[in-house]
Length: 353
Figure 1 (cartoon, rainbow, N blue to C red):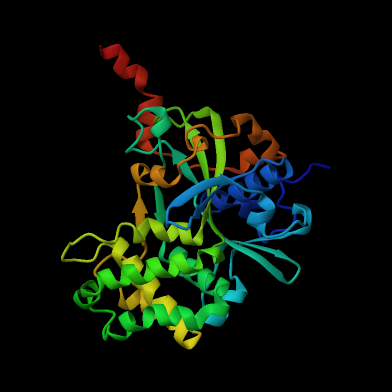
Figure 2: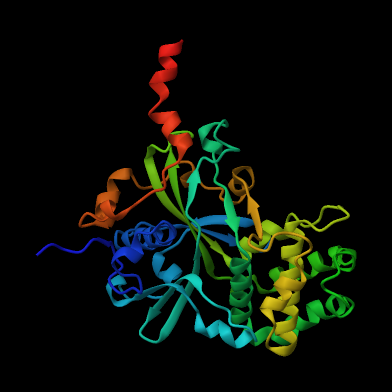
């Protein structure tokens, strides 16, 4: 009897058969499987966390810490695009799903966003290899879940948190008014800085960023091909807080993220709940609503300051230990004309020279 195509470690999952391999599904299925493989082989990921000086630092940690359990992979449930129910209590709206929820039975262990990224990106491939970086695109669903997770971790500190934000937030009458929010920019950033300084002991793993490295801009995998970085929720917030201080007369996407985070923190700390959808709709500030912000490789490399960013731990050969029973044949990458020209038609142009 032929075994079903599968991915390493995902014994109990809400994705079955073809659901593992679709274009949008594989980008989160594979990273979860890679994490299980690294966990079973005691290969530690790189954890990006916020220190007491509000600087993002990198260190190796165990996947037991990331998964929030010592229970083995085969006894866990990996639910993709599912709701992390413990966070629902802080929102009037349906908070919908996050990329990956890790559970044991009815116990919720960890909620993780997943961003599979390539090294190098278009802004760093011409730099020396040690300075290669990856672009990361953050969705509104990521920052809202990040805020909910932070407040869940700080649930016993709401009174002190409210005191940090109250003076600034009470003086903002119309959060949808970009000019009014911008007038409080310095105060907003000061509040966020003070909050993170006082409560960074509550930070926890939030965004799993597997990287795959290629030979320059080609799609060919490098001999050092795969690794995983994990951002804490506090560390991820630094990427936009750090860049919210420009003196522009309009709010950048990054400043908008800082203002949204401020409002969510204050409302939950004050009333135990907030209207997530209303915050994200009201505070659009003229930008498209499907993207919160993006950071290119020149930016992310300053945060992902670890040798494994440019020299990942795992070789391409581990693919055969992760993609099982012919699963690679289930993949159906989209055909792109520029790829066909670049790879198949190259000889045509060579003949013309």
